[in-house]
Image (tube, rainbow, N blue to C red; front, side, top):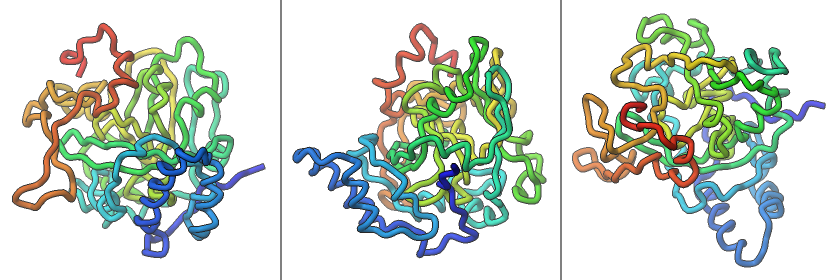
Length: 325
C-alpha cells in the first residue's frame, strides 16, 4: 500500500511555511523533555495535533532526531532565497525566481548498475518504506558561506541497502533531471548537463548521509532541489545534488560535473577543509548568511569536515586530504 509522503505545491505561499517560532519551540521542547523521559514518538504526536496538518506539511509523518538539536536554523526565507541551482540561473536569487517551471510530480528515480534490484521507481514508492526524520545540519558552500538547515528526509544508507548493491559497487552516482523546459538554465552551456555527483559506497552508507524531501517540516521547495536531493553535511554544497532522477552503482570512480568543469578547483571528495584553499580564495573562514551587516558580515572559522569529524574522519584514514581534495 502506498504511503504518500510527497505533496506538491505549485507556488510557495505563507500558508505553506512552517512558523519558525513553532519549529524552534519544538526543538526547545525536545531538550527539556529529555530530562523527564518523554520520548520523541510521544512528542511527535503532540506536535502534529498542535500544529495541524495542511498542504505540504510533513510533520505528522516525521520523527524528530537529535541531529543538530543544539543548532539554531536559518530562516525559511534565507534558506529558500539564497542558494545555487544553476539549472535555474547562476545568481543566488535566480532559483527562487525561476524554479516555478519545475514539475516535481510525477517523479521517478531510476536505480541501475551493480545492484540486485534495478528498476524505475515512482518517488512515492521509493520513499514510502522509510520513516521520515527531521535533521538539522550545518551547510557549507565552497564559495565560503554557510547556513544551518532543518531537513526532512530519510537515511541514504537505508534506501541504498534496499537495492542490494553487489561487492563491485564501489561508488554511487547521482544524476539530476535533464529537461530544458523545466530547467531553462540547461539551455545554456554553463556546465555539461545533466548535473552528476557521486560518493564512495562507504560515504554513501555513513549515518550522516541523507536524502531530503523537505525542510522546515514542509515538502522541499523547487529551488532547494525538489522533490529529492542529497545532503552530505561534511562536504561542500556542490556535492549535495538536487532533483535526483538516477542512482547508479559502479566499480570505477566517476568524473563529477564540477570536476569536469575545473578539475584543479573541485575535487572528487570535496570535504570541507580549512587547510586546503580554493585556488581563488581562502577556505579558512566562512560568511554566515544573514548575520552581521552588508559591510561587516559575521564570519566564523571553518571546521575540518564542517565539524562532523567524529562521524566521518575514519572514512579517510591514510588518505592525503590535500591531494585528494
